[in-house]
Length: 111
Image (cartoon, rainbow, N blue to C red; front, top):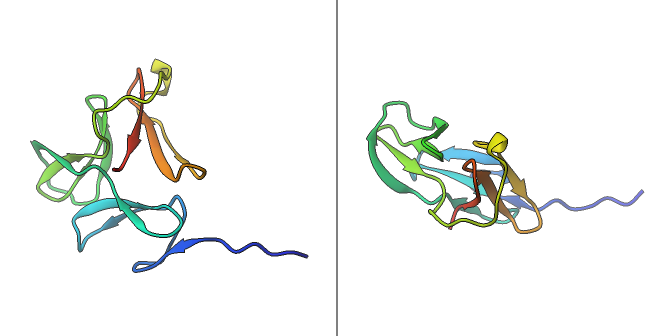
């Protein structure tokens, strides 16, 4: 039986598509199969207190670094999505990105 190698990230160890709060960098990152990719990290100026929490707020998926809410995606639209999908996100293993629907458009999470 043939076995396939699965790409993984190191430091910390993770598999492609895995999301993780990386406390040392104060950011939510995802593994693209090789390296940890930092989400957008644009400070919204809104305060929060629980580091690592990710939630859908005001048509954005944001994370808390323990002090402020940060956007996970740049404000760039990448095609229409249904309003019923607002807040949903998925990992595209071919393009190695996370995408989320803001209720009108898909946005790429990350750089």
